Image (tube, rainbow, N blue to C red; front, side):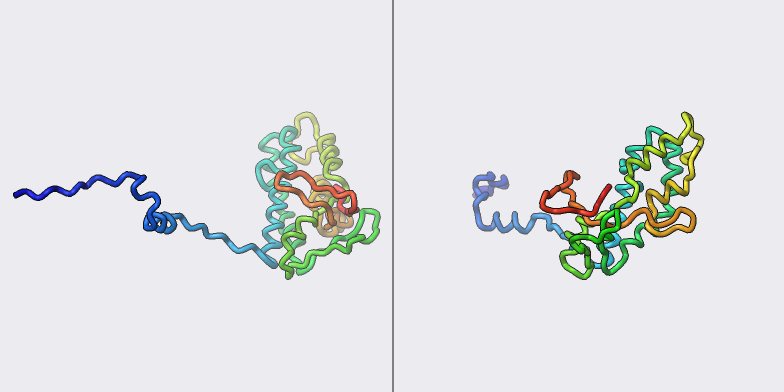
Length: 210
């Protein structure tokens, strides 16, 4: 006498889609997402400094590259980025303070908000979005001067101009014995959205200028 063979076919999705066991298996099989805890303290300061350096000059598509690559060409632009790295350490060190404070307006008046970022504060990351490295000479003006000084076929990124003066204007977070006072300072300003558009509030007056 032959016993009836059991079917080895998989059950149809409808037969088990709503079962308790099926729901439990689906929950357990979901890939777990491990979220990193938010950075705090000096780790937050260093990370934010690195991001700002990269978006300004260090990474492809940076602000300076967008404005100067067509004038210098890939080789001379790479030479400039390589030279600029000698300013990177001081640039990042400017962020590595327990408390960062707005230095006030360009004309020397104190910050009306007395704005500071205390890296011991849990809200430091949010407040840091409203503290900018502001240039005493607007970046667009410095870049126009740079472009105008270059000959038609430049042989170097600083052909026809004082490269030290240019870099101090762009990256000078410290006083310089030749080029004078620091040219980049912390000033409060409106934060940017994820789309990089600036949020402006008519009720506030900020010290950030460029």
